[in-house]
Image 1 (spheres, rainbow, N blue to C red):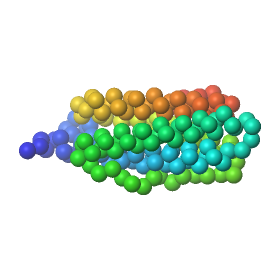
Image 2 (image 1 turned 60 degrees about the horizontal axis):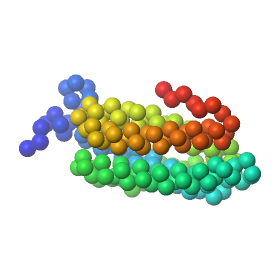
Image 3 (image 1 turned 90 degrees about the vertical axis):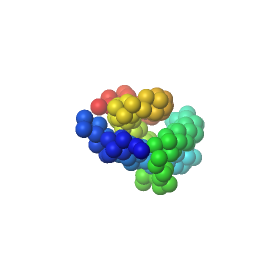
Length: 159
């Protein structure tokens, strides 16, 4: 029989429970699906010589985001949940800079969420899961750097 505290959404110490972690990981998974779609589309529709390097980079990002989705799905299953199947909405634009800005904003949100997720996993004693999230986080930070560089900006500070 499972410990009641383990299955509850909030433990007595204020940390989230496994059910809440599944919910949050599913939100992350929806965001990964969003990233896959946006990177696939943006990489193909970006126009102009100044964006050719980042277009190729976005193709690589799409594959990395798919790998993240697979890791998250596996972890959700491990926790006894069912992975979601719908992406968060994908924003598009006719303007290349605007599309890259959308991606930059999405990556910043993703990084904030994964930083929080690492702590939540550790609070639950799911240290291996926290390591998986850290590996994803490293890729997301690389994506943020590439997007900021393509926009000619400093990498934003994520709080």
